Image 1 (tube, rainbow, N blue to C red):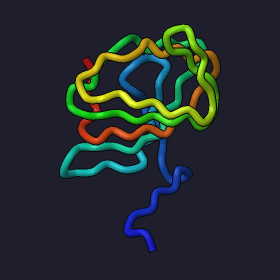
Image 2: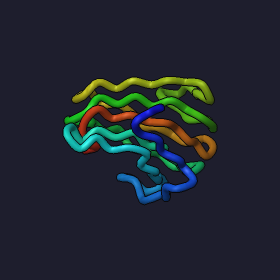
Image 3: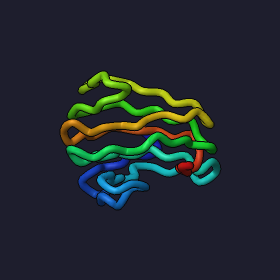
Length: 109
């Protein structure tokens, strides 16, 4: 048996760090501040280029299509942004839902 189980039907969407982005926190590691979240990008929104200074980020697209540097990526794509490396902008061509992991606190700069 797994020591922790999260059911999305028992969680709620909440505002993300940018307009057009919502987060559903599935797990937060208290000792590191790390997060496992579902992220929803509303269609047509652009998330500006940014940096996570305190965490590495992995994002796996579960549904939808987003654009990075003129290339469209869809379901089944995994992105990795190392801590301190500027990435984006992210353009949501459709509504996008990603499973995203931050191994430290979610801060953006």
